Image (cartoon, rainbow, N blue to C red; front, side, top):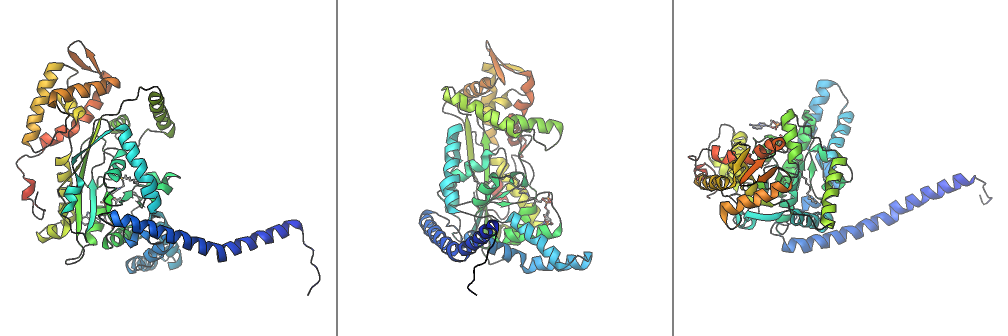
Length: 469
Ligand SMILES: CCCCCCCCCCCCCCCC(=O)SCCNC(=O)CCNC(=O)[C@H](O)C(C)(C)COP(=O)(O)OP(=O)(O)OC[C@H]1O[C@@H](n2cnc3c(N)ncnc32)[C@H](O)[C@@H]1OP(=O)(O)O
């Protein structure tokens, strides 16, 4: 019993290692975890005291617990049982697949990462590159919304700066949970996104098990009051116009609502830019008719490097304005009071219409539209056309977001911004579009075109089920 045992050194080291791991996981990790949990709870309590829409307990649930809850949800279990019966695959295999899907979707929200890193970085970056303007303040729009309702920000997707701007602008009121496409599943971006409370979507995966897990996750979050943000177009606009809604996430959100239950209130958010960071990439993708973006990590790094070099040399100019308009909210309870042959399709169309009408028109889109597809126009004529456009935009209820000095000042500012990028050249009295950039001018003119094409006769206040404007 007490005689010595001789073992090789490597085995001794291995035993020590395993003993150390066992000690840590049994004695130290639980208390360390408890310490961090208490700290997190104190941080959240402090944040909730000042946030208009507090961080919901659902958002703070431990990720493993959330995954278990999702995999064992009765609706998910039913899909597993149905698929097992139909395909002959063992239920345990399908359950493992369900766990994999749930792990992919479920976020790992950290209030410290969201408010300490993401919000600060969003504020810094937004202000560094744009003159951020709020066409219609979100606070005023949200003030009338029932405190118990689940708020969902529904946004048009022009740029990867969209969520940076909106995260910054609503950060004093709530923490947003975004629906993010599979493109962002690259480390460390995926870690930051999960820790910011966003959930991942695999847009091309349409098998029933995956879709049921995704829909249940969205519905649980909605039933528990988690403030969310979605891009119903499902990707960046290649043309500059606001596209139609894909109805998946909206249908899950509508499915989470029951008469008499917690209301779901959609806040339409419209974004407009003087310069969209990805403009040339989007225009090229549109031309090729693909959604494959030719922006390698190397080209992004080169772009950032050029801007840093300019900043260090004191030659960095902001990219103009970025304007965000928070539209009149749509209450799902009120919307459902009116009869709808297809409620989800009607809701999607109505929300996108509201976003489309609210897209702010900044100087560059105004100038781009004033070219009217021509290659060269006299400056005075551009100002005259811009003034006429501003009047017509006013007639259809659009709100141009222009500097003091109106159309003339806007034309001057836009020419300066585009000339810096060699998109236009000034030759005497004439402003000439660089022939290789004509598509880019069309891309920027798109929101103006869309405003003017909208049927001015249909008054949004008359749409059934809407909160009054
Ligand atoms: C500096 C640091 C700053 C940091 C700041 C931090 C922030 C933290 C980062 C955030 C970062 C965000 C970045 C986001 C930017 C993107 O990633 S945008 C792209 C991702 N988002 C989206 O795609 C959302 C919108 N997409 C959808 O809703 C899509 O529909 C889906 C769910 C992906 C599926 O797409 P789909 O296969 O094309 O199918 P779709 O027809 O749309 O939908 C089918 C479903 O809808 C149902 N449906 C369709 N029509 C109807 C109808 N009329 N009635 C009822 N149901 C219907 C069908 O039944 C079907 O149901 P399921 O079979 O799924 O159960």
